Every structure is written in structure tokens, then in C-alpha cells.
Amino acid sequence: MTKTKTARRNAPRRAAGLLALIVPALLLSGCTGAIPSPAASTNAPGWTSGYVAAAATETAPLTGLTVAAGSSAHPSLAAKVDNHSAARPQVAIDRTDLVFEELVEGGITRYVAVWQSSIPDQVGPVRSIRPMDPDIIAPFGGLVAFSGGQQRFVDAMNATGQVSAIFDYDTTGLFSRSKATAAPHNVILAASEFVNRNASVAPPAQQYAYAATLAGASAVVDGAPISAINTRFSNSSARSWTWNAEAAAYLRAQDGAPDLTADGAQLKATNVVVLRVNVSVDQSIPKTELIASGEASISSGGKTLAATWSKTSQGMPIRLVDANGVTIRLAPGNTWFQLVPNGTGSADLIP
Image (cartoon, rainbow, N blue to C red; front, side):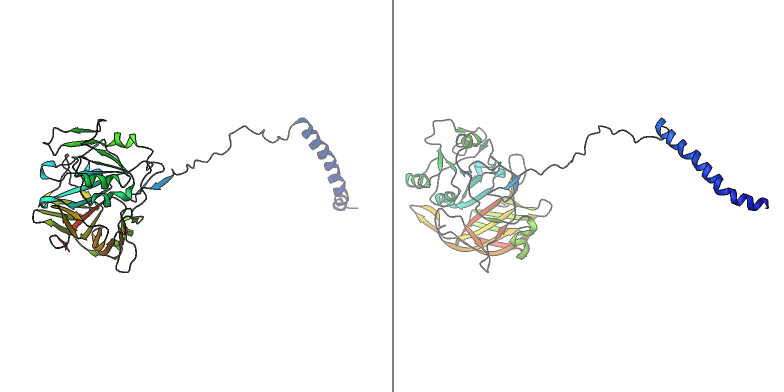
């Protein structure tokens, strides 16, 4: 037999012999720890999410702005504010949510100024009530401050259910006289103190419809580009609003000069609403007739939309609708209402 054939016959035997040697060796090494065991588990902390829930928000009732939840849980404050040239610059008029400018005696104007989203420490100068003021203020259901007025007007204001602070009768220290201007243009209200004393009074209901953004406001969507709004209440009272794209607001002027705060900043508004109104006169006192309806223009974002205004009762807010009867959405922000008389007043829109 050849060596090759012998090697072939013996190969299986050698393989079996090697296997017999290897298996016990492997078993022995497993017993002695030669094969590494799995690593011991560690006590590392589990995964923690870094997500932080967004703070709760709500819509401010008199501006339509998004604010922190709970920050609107206080009443509105309306005040009758002087607009005589000797009363300017007014205190905190630039922090208002709403301003209504109205014709009074002598062809001049006064304001019903309303604060809610931000209550200043002081406001003024405060002046006397007029016959249309209960119709303007009643829907807010909050606080009102004025210096006095004819008893019939004071009674009408008190009948609305507002909480009144009246300078002529106040003995609680809510009012003081400023040295910055001369009497009678210097009566100042401690506004935040007045609100704090009446914190349990409910906040106002939302008065107007608001878009979520400036771009969504009805005037921006459907209106025509207008660069300036010129209004005249009488031969002696001219007002203008000029659109400023950088400020995203209308800048105000009175009688041809910028209307400035005490710090030199020009007054501005996100929305300018012009209402054409009838004015009656009783015992030489003009009264803007607001339980009525009429033509209006709504300006937001550099555009103006023709509209109709109406107010069905004293306690209802002014309603604004477009030519199709659709409720107009203001831009979020502050609003000035110009109550321009029919006949003696005028309103011109400048492209």
C-alpha cells in the first residue's frame, strides 16, 4: 500500500483525535474564566426630555394681542382726558388700548381714553364728563374717572354701573394736581391705585374682532393703499395720521404739528377708525349721537377700508362691518377712534 493511500485512511482518525483534545480544552477554559463574561450593567440615569411646555396665553380684550394667561384679570379704566393745548403732553396717553376723540364746546376736542392691558401709575389731565361719554364707556363695565360735570351727565354716567372716581367729590386721595401745567389742566389720577382698589371688578368683554396678525386685518386684505388720514372736527381742530412702515403704525399730528409725549415720542396707533357722526346741541353742549349708525373708514397697515358703523344700545359696543356686511377684523394693537361730525367736520384719505 502506498504512503498516500495510508495518509488518506488515517486522516479521519487524526481529525477525531484533535477534536477530542480541543473540546475538553474549551470546556476547561470556560470554567476558568478565559472567555470574557458580559460587562456588568451600570447605574447611568435614564433619558430626560428637554421639552418645556409653552406658557399659557390669552387674548387681551381691548387690543387683540396675545398676552400671558391671567394678565388681563382686572377691570378696564376709562378716563375723560383733556386735549386743550395747555394740557399737552398728556400723561400716559401713549399707553392706552383705545382712545375716542370727540367734539366738545368751542370747537376743541377731548378724549375718552381706555387702559386695560397696561395700567399706568398716573393718567391725565382729567376733565369733566360730557353727554356722549356714558354711551362710549358703558360697554366696558369697569372703572371711570372724571373731574365732574353737569349733574345730569354725572347721573347718566353713574347709571351705567361703572365704578366712578370723581375729582370734585373724592376724599380718598386718588387725585392730585400736577405742577407741570396750570389749573384746570392739571388734575392727575392715581390710576393703578384706583384699579387695585377695585380688583374684583370683572375685565371687559372683547369689544371688536381682531385678526391674528397685521397682515390678516380686514383693511390690509381688502383695503386700498392710503398714506395719510386727515380729519377735521371744526375750523379750529385738525388732526392727521401718517402711515409709517418702519414703525408699523400711524403717527399722529394735531393742527399741523406732531403730537408728542412728554419724552418727545410721537403718538401712534395700530388702527385708526374714523366714524362719521351726527352731533346734536343741548344747552350749548355738543353731543355725539352714538345710538345710531353711519359711514366709517378703517385703517390698518397702510391701507384703508370703507365701512359702516352701528351701535344699537348704550351697553353694546360699536359694530364695524364692510360693504358686504362682514364684521371687520382690526389689527392686533391699540386703536384710536375719531368721532368726526357730519356737516362741520371732514375726513380726507391721501393715497
